Amino acid sequence: MKKVALSLIALWFIPINLYATPFLFESAGLGETGQTSGVSISYNQFIGTTFSIDRPVWVSEIGGHMAATPGETIFGAIVAISDSGVAPDFNPLDIESFALGFTVFSPGSPSTDYRTSLELMLTPGDYLVVFGSGLFGATGSAALVNVTNPVIEGTDWLSTHNTSSEIPLGIWNCCSTPSPFRMVVAGNTVPVPEPATLALFGLGLAGIGFSRRKKA
Image (cartoon, rainbow, N blue to C red; front, side):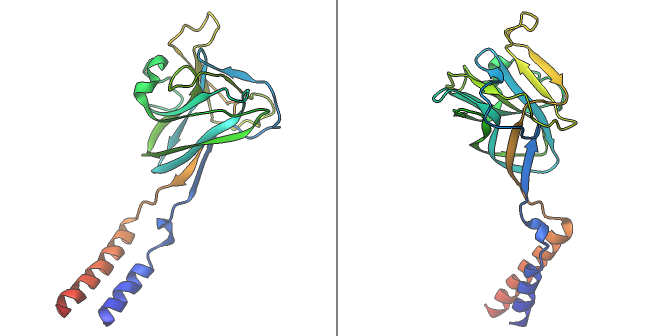
């Protein structure tokens, strides 16, 4: 009985860093909401931002400071890339084949710090969160607000399908810094036990198992 009690005590003292902590990536701060205009997100212009994580993250929401005519739908997607701050090495028209996860939504109007559900597990690495239309079943357009948002140094933004003749279709226009657009990825970090924690947990389980074998 004592060995079982000691084993349970060992499990009880597993460090609290096993618990998940909130994760929030922001490409810019939140400026004044209630805006009715911004840079177009549409079938011929996607806008996104790159980000990096150094530990597993369970994503629950993506979004940003944006607005759209009610009923107008756009997509949001997350894609793994080789390096943050560098243009993805695939044609943006093929993003449906590379997306790890996506969602289709309507931000509404006027602008708010809009969030939409997207549940996805990400391992450490570099990623792109991008918004657009014409793919994934999204058929509308929206505006990504680019005024009044406080900039955050070290962030970037990229676009594609720009109507400007200087940017051909199917080419990423990457990457400008810092981002005037607020795009967010929210969720929780996934606990990664430290070696000492794993050892303590193993000792606890071993103690319980030994006690049960003795009773048998």
